[in-house]
Amino acid sequence: MAAAQPWTANTTHFIAGTWTPATTGRTYPNRSPWSGHILGHAAAGDAEDTERAITAAHHAFPTWSRTRPAERQRVFLNAADLLEQRATHVLAALAAETGCGHHFGTVQLDFAVKLLRQAANLAYHPAGELLPSDTDGTQAMAVRKPVGVVAAIAPWNASLTLSGRAITGPLALGNTVVLKPSEEAPYTGGTLWAEILHQAGLPAGALNVITHAPGEAGAVGDTLLASPLVKRLNFTGSTPTGRRLAEKAGRHLKRVVLQLSGQNPLIVAADADLTHAVDAAVYGAFIHQGQVCMCARRIYVERPLADAFTERFAARAARLPTGDPADPATVIGPVINEWALALLDRRVKEAVGLGARVLAGGEPAPPCYPATVLTDVPDEAEIAQSETFGAVVVVETVDSAEEAVARANHTDLGLAASIITGDSRRGLRLAATLEAGIVHINDQPVNDEPQMPFGGVKDSGWGRFGLGFAAEEFCETQWVTVRDEPRTYPF
Image (cartoon, rainbow, N blue to C red):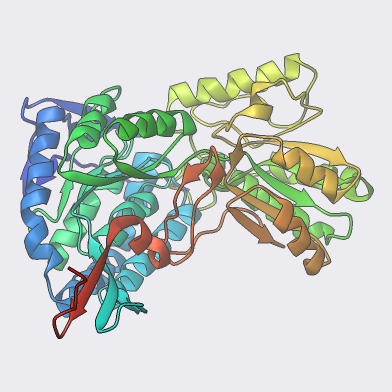
């Protein structure tokens, strides 16, 4: 199949409703991870640009926060329609900019459209509740109010979905936003959202987008954290970066919502349907070439099923089509950049040097890393301890599902997990003992819906994304009392 024509774009900042270059005039090349071609040039922002965006968001907040529910609803419904109408363009841009194949691009697009349509209803959600008071004649209320300016820092790997999730809940609740997308996805993770929402009727300044060159995120992030006008920050990315942000936020007493790394287990019980278990594991380990925070990184199989599962799973992995993300048949597309490819190669080689066996893959095919299955990986190997962002999974045999849970819990991370079993009640019992923020029974771990409480435990994050929980993260609760007649005081 012939490759699609290259997608091209030049992107600038979006501040106060205006497309504007970086103050310095600097740009950087936005390169395709598949071809290496320059897709366009993006604004290389700095602290001064970030301050301008924060000020614009602050000035827009009073008007947007008081906008009538019907007007807010109309913006998000319009945006959903516009995004659907641009589906072909969006899918091509995701493939070109992030190496995202057709299937995962469609997953992202469907999620984003649902996100916008569900967000349209947030304007009509209750803004508080009446509370019982022991003081006669007093009516008490807990009232939720938007906090003001929210900073959103989003990654490249699911750029459309994760940037959309970072901004939509806060905006729908009446906040204004400054979005910093990844330097690897300035368009699909940043200015595309500004295009859509601005065209849908979002007022100037409600959403502002700042892009930056590789290696220059610190100035933008530090400015967002230090500004007293920024009241909340949400971040999706690695645990080490999240930890640094949390430490800095603590010095400013600034609340953060963090969705961080995962070392996600998939447990296959002895009573599982073998075909379903293999199908689920292949999808959960290798979707978007393993570059999803929820991907299965460790597969634990009870001994009676282990040999048959491992043989079939490795054979399936070895046959997965690898190549151009613009080809709908491709399953394993390019790794996002050369550094990521080198890290995958180094960690696999280290594990093999320590005694691991390669059952499939194991050799880079630049710019791709083929689906790789390892077994007999020692605990001291980096790949057994840290999130390895790529199409590499470790398979282990265990004597019981309970042993699998114990091994799964023996990590500092706790994002997602899944259990494949013929006994769903047993699955629920095992889920209760797993130290993970998300558990899927008889499914693989890569699942998300806009309304669900997405987030991890331990070093996988703080707080929950999801429109049903956004008010807890991006609103202040104010206690208000009212009396209709004077109160009697003792002195």
